[in-house]
Picture: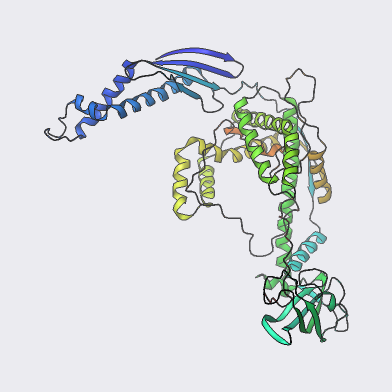
Length: 534
């Protein structure tokens, strides 16, 4: 095989490989010799079929296989001989005029990873902001859970219902004096002012007391779901069972036991632990961002355009998905387009940080053990159904690119943990609100990036402000810098046979609510008959 370098510019390389017809024929002959003993043909004893007949029968497929194998071996030899570190899979083109029996001319183009000077990790200084968990936070969290369960304290019997109270009623709905199907129920909880029932129902509960009996006069909306009730006047005979204080959730042993716990103390212990985990996560997010900001500010080098393009495409796909769920998708998309260069700058930053973390990890012996990798594979396999699970495991074990993609986030976290240990860390106790504000200031108080050279005189650590259409996984968060150890690994294509990933389910009892950014907005409940008449 002959090799000629045709391009060596920056991180771009190109070569022409010439594979002789003699090399290809030799591979074909070798394969014929290996398969001939297994070939059966009428008129010949097993294993005695002449080579020329074997070639006549299977020659075309053997030649294709021989050519493909020659190309693959040639590329591997090229990479080894030239000591290349490909950023992405090389582009390979076979001369259009190629015919079997002639030499094959192959054009190979690729981008290589940059040579990064030994990253400086001396002098790193970080502030660790920690937020303690107070009793008030635990009480508030418990109250939210109780509120979601409608576990409210009851008012005294003499209390008159007002806007915001929850009235528990038994009811019988009638049209023209006759009870209609689905219009009868017991112990229905109605929060006055919620607007969840048909017009006029909630308003007529204002002023009722526990034990009152009352007839409510309402009219079903014209567009009501049940045609036999739409637009018709109706009455509801109600009996008020109790009136609950919606502002005072009932948090006691009985409520905790209804969640499957031993009592209120266990509930509070669980909530405190969960809040502590949330605080630890916020602390790590703040520290990691500050750490990577320092690294980005002190290291600047060219990055492979193909990696930047792949990273940008991932960011852009996330943004488009989020924009599709905005109230005004067209406006969100227009805003994205206006900020497109900024997002491309984010992609450059993420790729550069990923490569930098990779170099730091390799230089300092950071690795992901076989045991850790096996655990990652098993955890990822749980996304799939029983039939696809084993296929996924085999796929990851056989495809280095898939394994690299799975390994990358853990490797990055281990490199970050290593840097935390090396940094000079000062501790400061703050409130949760102050910690969240510090993280938000890091997101919104930064300038927009640019992709200029190192001599442009600008700050190369700039980042854009958060966008309305930004995905939950923030594009400019250095914590999502792609890759570390496997920054240059190509992501494997998704398997069509893979089952859809199940949504995570919160653990039985008292999971604390997610942060406001993580929780989906609750859709307004559709109008329904007071008595569930639909």
